[in-house]
Structure formats: C-alpha cells, structure tokens
Length: 476
Image (tube, rainbow, N blue to C red; front, side):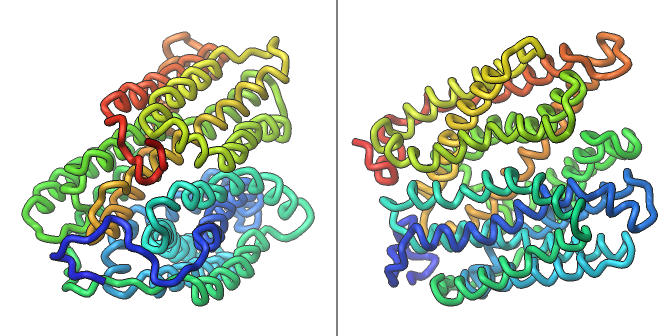
C-alpha cells in the first residue's frame, strides 16, 4: 500500500491471485441477497399487513425505512472501509444484513419490522459500495470489464427470482421465510469473504467527516423519502414537497461544507475526473429511465392491457433475459468496439427501444412485445456495464473508496428520481386528458418523457475520447 499522498495506479495489482471471476461472484452473492430481499418483500406486503393487523398502505414504511437507512449510511461506507479494511467491513456488512433479516423474520409488529429494516439497510449500505471496492482493489484493469459483467448478474437475477419466490413463500409457507432465506446466503458469503477477499486499508490518516455525514444524510433521506412518497401517492403531496425542499437546502449546505473540508464524506472533487464525471451524469440520465421501468411496465400491462399480475410478471421478466445474455458478450463487444462507440450507438439503440415501449398496444403480437423487451434488455445491460466500468478508469488509487461511495449514492438517487418523474408525468397526463384512471395514452406519455432523459446519455457520450477506457476494454 502506498501513502494516500503518493501517486499510485487507479486500481491496485492484487497480491494474491484469486480469480477475478471468483472475486466478482463472491461480491455478487451479497448483492444477490439484497436484490432478492427487496423484490420478494414487495410481493408479500399484503400478507404481512394482515399478519400485523394494519392497513396494507401502511406497509410501505417497510420499504421506505430501508431506503432511508441506505441513504444515510452509503456516503460513509468508503471512509469506514479505508479505516477498518475492505474485507473486515464487507464481512461485517453481510453479517449485519443477515442479523437484520433474522430480526425481520421474528418481528411481532410493524414497528419492530421497521427497526429491523433500518438495521438491514445499514448493512446493505455497506455491502454494495464496499463490495464493489473489494472488486476494484483485487483485479487488474485488464480484468475489470469481465469482472464487472459477472458482478452485475445479481442485479438481473434478483428481480427475476423475486416475484415467483415471494409468491411461492406467501402461498405455501409463512411470510417470515422471505427473510430466513437470506441466512444461508449470508453465512456462505461471510465464509467466502474470509477465505478469498484481500484485506486492504489506507495507511494514511482517515478523518471522519461527521458534519458532512449529518448534512448528506439529511439531504439524501429527505430527497429520497419525498420522492418515494410522491411516486407512490402515499401521504400528503405537501409533505412530499416539504421533504424535497428540505433535502435541497441540506444539499446546498453540504456542498458549501464539502468545498472547505479536506476529506468530505461525498467528495465532489472527483467530478474533475472526466470519465468519472461522464459516467455519473450520463449514467444518471439512463438510470432515470431504468428506475421508471419496474414502475410503469407492470401497471401498463395490468391497467392498460387487462393482464393479471402473473401475466404482467412474465412480460416484465423478458427484459431480464436479454440482460443475462449480454453478460457473456459484453467483454468481447467492448474490446472490439471501444467504450465510445458502445456508449453512443448502444445507448441510442437502447433509448429507441425504450421509446418503442410507448407504442405497445393490446393489438400487438405478444412475440413482438417480448422481442422489444428482450433486445432492449440486452443493449441496456451493455450500456450499464460500460458506465459501471469506465467510471473508475482514471480515478487515482487513494480516491477509489471515495469514488465507490459517491457513485453508489447518486446511482440510488437516480433510480428513485426515475420513479418519481414517471409517476409525476403519468399523473399529469391523466389530469390533462381528464381520465378517471390511467389509460394507454398516459403510459405512452410517461415512457416518452423518460426516453427524453435517456437520449441525453448517448449525446453526452459523443464527448468521450476515442481512446477512453482502452486499458480496461483492450480496444486499440
């Protein structure tokens, strides 16, 4: 390890030769646990409401409490990893998430469940960025594209398995098994991290930015909870507006604080690195669209097409098939075409396929709908492998942990913003057309609105140099 003040390569050369694929799959096992947990839980909320003898709408707090815990804790993850070591923190995060899962399964009331979900969220907030940091610190640049492709598999498999697994558990078992299934995954993850993940920590002084943690936590918690309330139509619109306004004020205060702190918890100086800034901003435009899809597509299929929940789930599943297929092809495509060509042309194709979704109608052959979603998932997956990889191409080694915290924070915020924007446009279209409920034209307007955000990404990609990220992709 070099001192933080000395120049060092962006991604360190591993001292042990653990296979990059194995490292990625170990990290992915933790991410799979988190992805599976969220999608399975959403399926079981009505049954849990009956068990707790509360209104089903009140169960929304089981989702928002976790998101708020994520928002508060993610910014600190990089500093914690620098102080205590990547392996130690990643292992502790898995253990905390697993313990939180056990407590959720034992919850006798909604209040107890919310407290356990907050504990789970603290573990999840450390798992995602520190797991990514463990991968970045254990593979060479040449291996990063392949490793990142494997890492993103759980982001695809989790939403695929979640609804059917949740439905099976709720139908044939007790809802508490939704949380118990995390326990064996967590135990295996802890063992594998102990055996194969290298312990890396910064040798220089690591200062915790306490005021920055408070301000960023307030900003993110208010912004995400306000957007969540607004998008789900739960609670007062006035309250949602007040929370968003408070979040903006806290964010401005944090910005001023960060400009004068030597080691801020969210370091905006990272945005001076061109490839990192590009990935954050262009990725945010694309993630607005991605965040909207799980919200819009099931509603469109059920309300606009008259499909059952099971039928809409099978249709939603189609995009994930294309995403899985891309995991295999991504390294070869990036090596052949380079980041710039992929991010421009793949981003353009992905956006056009997203906009095509606005034209879906019941008269369309189902094979055509499945085809659009599968091909769209394929290209969208390559786009995000590109973002998640090139973000770290030029980040200096001492700033890698700060970069993972920053990137994960704004990744989560972008996805939540996508849901809120699509919900707002959908509601505005319903009001404009005077509909009592959402009609197909309203969903079309919402899809076109998020597509307008997504098209900004390939336009921004035209500014990428032709040799951007060539050390990662192998393209020359």
